[in-house]
Image 1 (cartoon, rainbow, N blue to C red):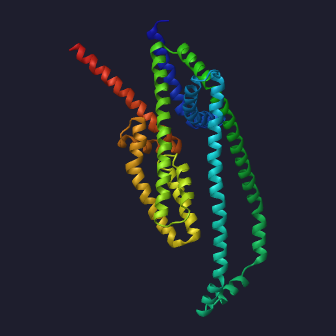
Image 2: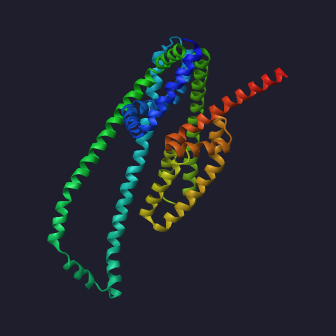
Image 3: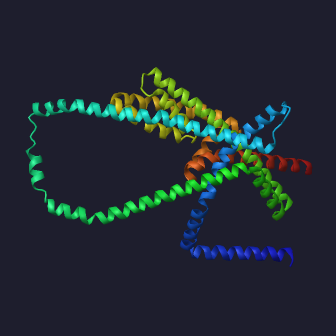
Amino acid sequence: MEPKTKQYLLVTVVGVTLFVALLRLSTVLAFAAELVDLILPILAGGILALFINVPMSGLEKRLKRLFRKARKQPSDKAIHLISFSITLLGVVLVLVLALTLLIPELVQSFHSLYLQIEANIPRWTAYLSAQNADTGWLMSWLEGINWEQLLHKITAGIDTVLINAVSAVSATVNIAVTASFALIISIYMSLGSESLCRHARTLVCAYLKPNHAAGLLKFCRAFRQSFANFLTGQCSEAVILGVLMTLAFSVFRIPYGSLVGMLTAICAIIPYVGALISCVVSVFLVLLVDPVLAVRCLIVYLAVQFIENQFIYPRVVGKSVGLSPLYTLVAAMIGGKLFGIIGIIFFIPLTAVILELVKEDACRRLRAKEERQ
């Protein structure tokens, strides 16, 4: 069969397939949802492995330099395993440290809130008595309630409550199972990253044309390096924001400064959005102590976050991936609108790679035009 005939046939098949898919759009979307639900543990495991691979690769390079001067050098597999163990241990230690700081502070805050309410009950009661508050309406309202009818409604609603409870438990179990499989898959992917990359490279070179295979492999290498630089810059920015938040809380005499700094540094791994999550938690913690301080906490937090978002984040993270502050903000905005938190994280390095490839292609085309002239 001639190449043009194959091309026409391929275009016809694709066009007919798209036409049928549009006619059966609901069925196609349902099938796509089932397919995504099926491969969700693999996708989540791959994303988690990509995050783990960044510090693991850095540790692996440093361990190779360290053992290069040793008389008896360990094998590459042993160094790979050691770097993975150190990375996993570091992640566990950070989580344990965060929980160790957060849980006691929350318990103490709820306990202080209970003591404040208990101490203020007599004052509130005395205030109501001094104002000659009429509570007769409350007694008449309670007497007018048909308790038998109310009990019947509650009994009739038990079935709905049980169904909702079973659905919630089922969803929770499903999420836990998916997370467990994703964690196990990420561990296997991290330990066997070299073999997986080798197999993927072999398949790409076998099934694609040389030019297309070279372009795809170049894009993957560039994205991996860009994502590593982005994650490194994001972690640096998270540490800077956590320190700034701790100092600001200490200067303005707001409680939980160290806890808020740790919580902000952890949540700031998510660009632009993570700091807002930690802001809500921080204001809630201070609100349990003093409502007036909660207002001051909100103002200070928003001020520090505004300075960080406008001046520190675009320069620290943007320089790490080679993006200007404008492109960094636009990439985070578009990624967040399309895919939420995952889109924010991945669109910044993806935009950096696309812009770099576009620049290279534009320079190549300009040089070709100059040579023709």
